[in-house]
Image (cartoon, rainbow, N blue to C red; front, top):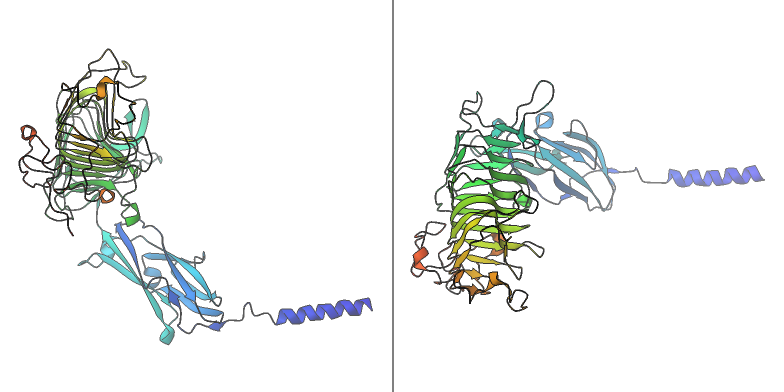
Length: 508
């Protein structure tokens, strides 16, 4: 009896298995649905791979189906690559007989690496499509990518596999010297607005040379990259006022990730570093975005770094970090930094007029302005701060105290704030007896200070620090410190407003 019972159950199991429909599919009838009908792969540089984009494909029917083919319209010659639910297909271009269960979905991941020569020469777009099935059942999802041609600057790669480096103290970093007679790029010290530049590693202006950036120049830095100005070297950034929101005449330094998701991500690249010994540096109409340190200034050769009409946003550490430097800043705007928007440290000589320093970093304890005359552990620890002067400025942010003054005895510590709006908590009495924060009584260091008044910026999250007539900063400036034109070239009225922007009515 036992063998017969076993055979009976085996027969039942085989009958049940033979009725399974897991792999019994019907052909697709062209009724797929998609999360998008067009995939826009955001702007990429020529021959640089894009990010990965996602398309979701739905089978909303009651049948398990087989899609006879999923392929790129340009076939094996396409500059796009796709994977279908983790499968790579034929060179990431062609997939045959793809099963999709009823009421289920699958993912397609899309990338591209294309050359400017592959794009439409009129609009610089490279296009293709993902084709599902064929004939009467054909369905398409369009693929569109804007290709930008660019000048690529990077360290040399040697035959033994090593890469060109620069000596920085006792360390070496990936970097190279800009060459005014480069056989490929020509004069690398002359940055033009013909094409954007993409820099890998630290591009360095050699001693006794000057790098010049003409109006409208765009420079994109890869991760762990930046610009160094060496001993006796200089940079001249010659942006001019723009007439549209495209900032067509501004010089812009930012990262090389062009997708919208990276437009405001701090710390994507290193810094612009004006080293000790660099000289006669001028910055005008420059925008710096998403660096670790926007501008690191260490030159103490006696020349003044001129920083005018300059905006620095979303720095993971500092917007400007100055050490024993000399800076004259006019119409400067800095917002969002992990430590301080502006840090004037280790002494030096600084003057900022009609400038806006704000910090809305998404955690507490950051400040808009830090001034000190020392660095812990340095030799010597303190150096003379001969001047830190702020005229017609706004110092504001989301933290209760947006200004910090710290000093060590034994070195000069000179500072003065004239006609400034400052956010500083005087209610808790934590600093009631601190002689450095006597905003009303100390006329040697403070004159016409507005404490804890709201400047009513137009839109902080979008880095728009315009004000209108309802702002506490409206007409509170002193004409003795007047810079006639604001950061966008608008004529200031009298008495002038505080900060970098002349007031105007906000758009409705």
